[in-house]
Image (cartoon, rainbow, N blue to C red; front, side, top):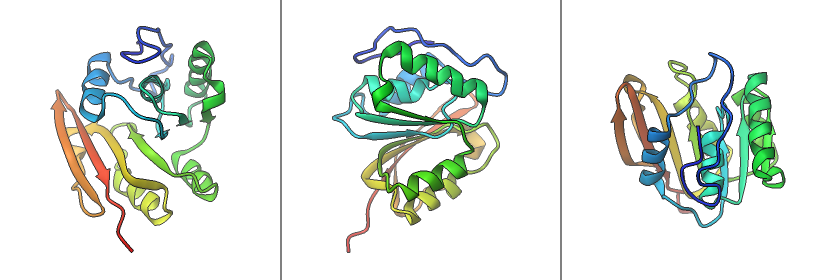
Length: 186
């Protein structure tokens, strides 16, 4: 597993030594970032089911300023720490070993707002809509925030306001949905 583009291009990343995570392939990662960017002009990224941290690190490599990397698995947490340390980006990355719902609550209490959200939960969790609703309710998304959902094709969500579907692409059994958050005008 490697960083595809940006300032850390071609740097190798460690993967989690566990069957509890499902890393995004380099090909899917490249396709995903070609669909959403491919580069960013700063911003704050949330990688909520981070695994090895590869997607969030890719976003940092492509120009995000700050990353919140969350995973409840201890091996994933250690792997993210190793990958972040190897790239010397510890000052810009916040790593939490906790359940996604506890992490969302903590981040909302800290009034952190995101410009990019990466949601790649374990298959069949069916939590995307719950997460999106929570983030809207707690004002965690900046206007025009991009949300990337990677899941099984049959788990693709029905997109509704305040989100707009920018793009949807299927790769084998996987579906990538790119949503844009449109803040309601007061």
